[in-house]
Image (cartoon, rainbow, N blue to C red; front, top):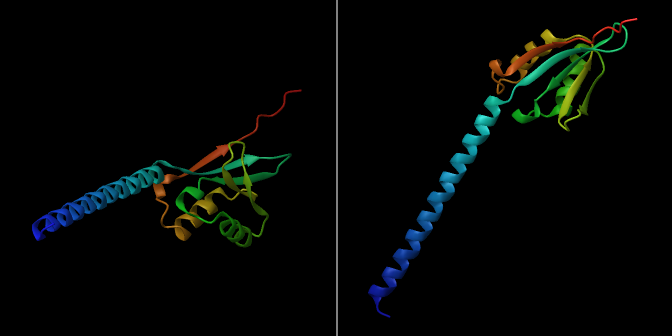
Length: 135
């Protein structure tokens, strides 16, 4: 083989590597965009639900999508509100933070200040009431 053929082979290898690298970059950008769209479409739901008698609890759903450590958040809520707080799996299999007591407004304000990566418009308050039994 002469020098010209070797140069052509090397040039084609370099061109193939560049094409491969460009495809990987495009895939990575698409993956990042899908993840960003998923985060923007996901809502963090803070809801108050009634328990037995006059007891209530606050449930926070959807924090894990934004990369928030639920155990640390649970610990922060329990120390901040001086109440029981835990991380449990709901019926759908997603993890949620449950707080004993009615702290919906305070939880939303705390989420705004502690986690700026969660957009304000993605935090939603929902009030859930049990229907009373008719006798």
